[in-house]
Length: 332
Image (cartoon, rainbow, N blue to C red; front, side):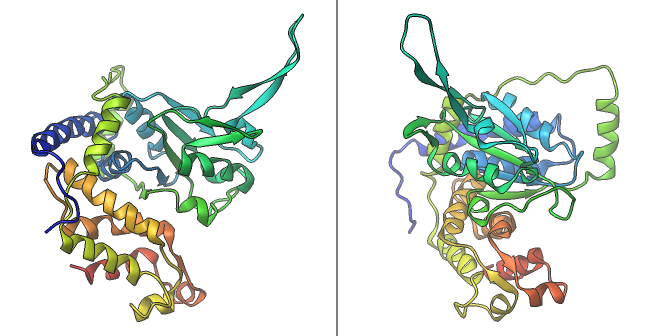
């Protein structure tokens, strides 16, 4: 018994064809981004789920290159915004200007900002003020913005891949909880291993330039996103998702550790994100349905940015990732 009913008889060959295309896109991106296979996979999971990703890591780990590469490989129109402390909301959304043409009445015309693109890279998003950060909220959730009472839709598909410096660095502003919840996954970008870094040295300091070809386009990506939502999910996987997310909420009595160490936990949007993410991971791996192992594997990127530690947890040196890992191990 599953929670999703197959709507047509050809879903298996469609899933296999889609998986092959996505694996080609992954391989193409990995030929440029060395030693970050997990990061590439989780970013693709985000895009196949129709969501937004928050890439966190110190400068110089190819976060910007990753977004540019995926834009080319997936055939998406991409734009980049460098977030700075003096960036204004109108620099992201756009603004109305007064036109005064000879012989015509004065009128306002809306000039679209860089947010009107299929793949938006918000580079170092936590360097901008909270007011500017929140300018992305409506577009990320509702895929449109409202200026002077007029609605302006973003292109389809629309995805935000934001990069962020670690919060302990100077000149950064923590993202509001409401905006953090809009990101489907938090993808931690770590240092490459020795072998990958050696390959990187040879590849990036020579004269040969890697040329990437588009494997998909925007329309095909949206078709795969719809296909992801049709993948059947076994009841045991649904129960594992619910158990995991609910156990991460303090005050519910589900976990003594959570009650003591977690100040606030994930809402229902986390369950929705995990449900979509495990389906997308199954498609990438060439499987016809997700498993509980997928729930465990994606628990950290789905939950980490939707939880906060209590003062007692910080005083005792508790780590949010370790807490999530223990909660996830309980659903295996």
